[in-house]
Image 1 (cartoon, rainbow over the protein chains, first blue to last red):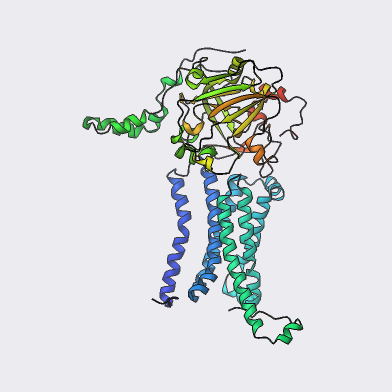
Image 2: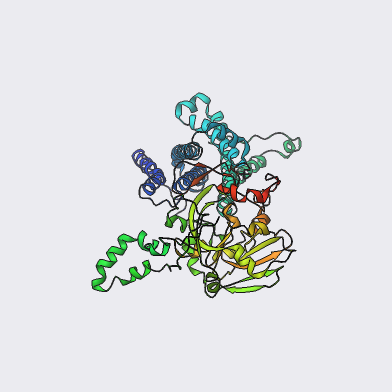
Length: 228
Length: 312
């Protein structure tokens, strides 16, 4: 078999794939629901649920960020058509995560919540990540992309890199002592962002290679072509 | 006033917790004994060793004790891993016999006690205490133990002794967490001498009428109910009376977040989270945290005139 494998699903196959993916993305929630029902979430189920929803938010952020590199490596351009759903699931899980905090941790004590956001660095950074994610979720449909314009939409959605970094920092700062897991997420994120930086640098050099040495000397700004 | 009525219902007379919690399995096993094959699960159910009858104590709270499975299944004991389910899973490797505890340092007569002698030193008392973890959750635990002051009296502390240092076991062969660098091993905790001599401070050797389960710090652990849980060292092998404030493991790890005193105090936040409320394990709504974990009347005077925001 030759790599990359050429695979292009038909419209119907893609729809089926999307439905399947949608159901798979709900599994973490179903597992929590089942665990709660059958009393399998340990001595502190509320903490377990809050942590688990946070972990799955982070997982979905990283999975969403994996789509582009995976597409580049495999040549499966249709993967891009699954990305919005994955990103929206990150938003779905962060909404639940936030709800457990506001409700089950703070019981809607808004004074305490505001104080918490201002005083606790890990909550400040987590809340910032959430706030930054809202416009991305709000502009995720086709109508909004058309309205904003593809180029500006893409610029806006690059904030996902910052959001993911904030999310990892949020995790790192909340851990008491053992940072093994946050460190693992940090490495994965660094890999995902590093690949992008590397490819961008390669692209820049390729473009530069086609420019006359004279132009380089004059310090002309070389724009990087917008990627499709 | 110290009321020392012998308990009318001693914990050991109650069905062992292990049997009670597994009563359905127990019944199934009992039904199956005619075949003689079901003896194994039955003997497992009886595995927890009962302790000699304990006297009740006026220091005990009337609050409802936290479920046995939560007390023994949700633990911070980093020597067995940092996840709270790790100790219950891994602590079976700990060997608690033979076990000695040496009490030394600035004392007239340093002594080494075999654990079984220590348990018989004085009649054990049942102490039902609140336990507040620095992470914002709490439990009510029926401990069995002896006052720490009783042990200290045995060695006669010298006048120069101002602090007591508690050193836990750190055996990489039986404690898998010790091979990680998460804390500076062995686990060291400390108290001021007057805190250590306070009647609320105990050395626990059991809970729920049974020998202390490994994950709870067997065979002997400190319990200081007005301080955050981490102040109560587990699986103690050495107690030293010293002149200077001991360098404890958590102070070494992060002095800004974990102070030497670490008295439960809703007014002094942990830098990363509020300490104003707590979730009692098994409850839905959070409770307000009480100063000194509700023991202010007994221990407040130990800290008279001290700035508790400074000495956190």
